[in-house]
Length: 244
Image (cartoon, rainbow, N blue to C red; front, top):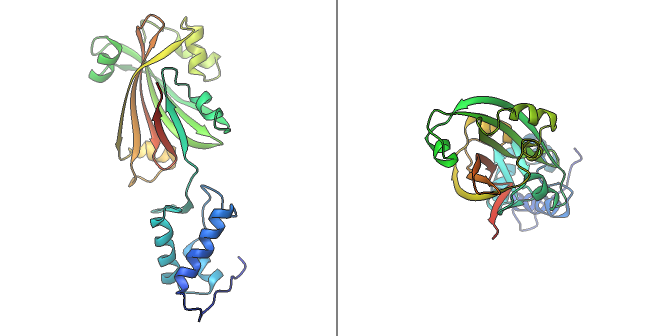
């Protein structure tokens, strides 16, 4: 990394000069959103100062919301925030594509589970009834932005795992192949909490920072519940909005 000269007798503290230089690089795009910054040691060598001076500059940049410091992972430029709109017709790929980003997703697992109290109430079935649970990781431009657990009644969709496989992992197409050409969002509850270990790992999100959580119920054209979903979003990368 090439050295960057800073004025030693300019009447401005060294850490403030470093902060100003890095803030300028963040604003100009020289350091891109989400990009990992050099280590304190590397920045110390670049500016020819001690690590304490660099650390003071980084703390101020984090206070301004320009960077995020993740314990054990490093320091990253703040992300461009995705505006994730919750509406009667909420479709992940369409929401991401509307923001000129490339949507992608992968199915992590398909499992047979028993309906717990929350899923049973949402789907209108008894506790202990068999459900399909499909775990899916959604990404925008290759960066994870959602981890969702989708629950479907087996009695309504006995061959749903095969339909998901045949559709290339698209739940919307799998439902269409299973007789539900269109479905709609009936309700969404929004909350926040710290992520579970698997969620933090999959979303590349520190466990010490909150995630946004939605609990949603989707219904078919006749208003019959077909899906209960719990989705987790990294709060620094996604903001939720509600459209009517």
